[in-house]
Image 1 (cartoon, one colour):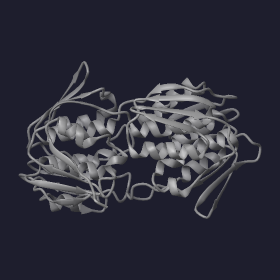
Image 2 (cartoon, helix red, strand yellow; image 1 turned 60 degrees about the horizontal axis):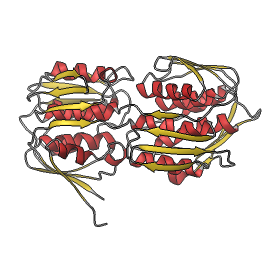
Image 3 (tube, rainbow, N blue to C red; image 1 turned 30 degrees about the vertical axis):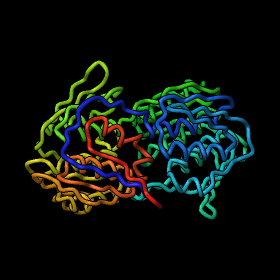
Length: 421
């Protein structure tokens, strides 16, 4: 497996263009199943998850063409109804084909999802919503089989037990072609959900309230293809914001929507990081050590769980003690032991981690366990004294487009070490 080698100590300076949002692109690509014809999606990041998604869509009869930053999908009517295990196991977001398939064809068979090992992420809310809309759900041999006896879903009120992002997105797609009105209560409010609503409406759907906790969808008879540019990735942007601050740098992030980062921005400013809006983006600068701040993750608009690991690195460079509480996933402190190997002083007690600030971190060989943990270890390597080798960086390739190239352009001493395996 490839690794990332970093010689720490160089402040990041310059401009970096933020790529399209992976977590917006994946449900939007899957929504192409709802309408025959040629869909064109722009500003799509070059990531492994995008390749996996287009391969999965190919299994479902969609012809995909990938060029730099553009994915063209030609959807046609097909007899394919199954998302197989060998693809779904690679990426949990593959379950996003479930809603579109059931909406379009009245039936789908989708393998139970895989993805990062950061805790249980059940799809019970997806299935609860589809059942309310008239689908019969059976679980057999590791697959979810959803079938609508009448051939078409019907609108319903669905009260979600938790504001699940992929569950909300799956049900939005399912409801777009259902008969009548569907109301999603306690829906996820993430910007990526709002972006999907925007795309569905461009396809001819009638979605209201996306981005709020109550979404109404009036089903239509049919949809048409769309041409759409994907929004910027707020988690990639947040990661570069933390990296700029941690290294004592000065970085302009191009194409960022600061409103999507309000919770992170508030914590960074409280810690002493300077964040300024400019015409072409957001400028981030600062000088360690920073003030310690406590953080509790929460669904949007709260502090994003996907930024918890990266912010923890910054808290390692404070004069003081901070407490980081993880409320979303029960197994998302796997990066702590690796940071402690680099000289951090972090104690985990259940769902909270107490971070004691230290003067500096030291380079070490560390092992990435999931996507955002990988990013945190890269940030730690940027600030550590000496050389850090981050192993198992295939996680990074799922969510960060050309991260070593972007960081090198900002002045980091970083390179990818190719595996001989």
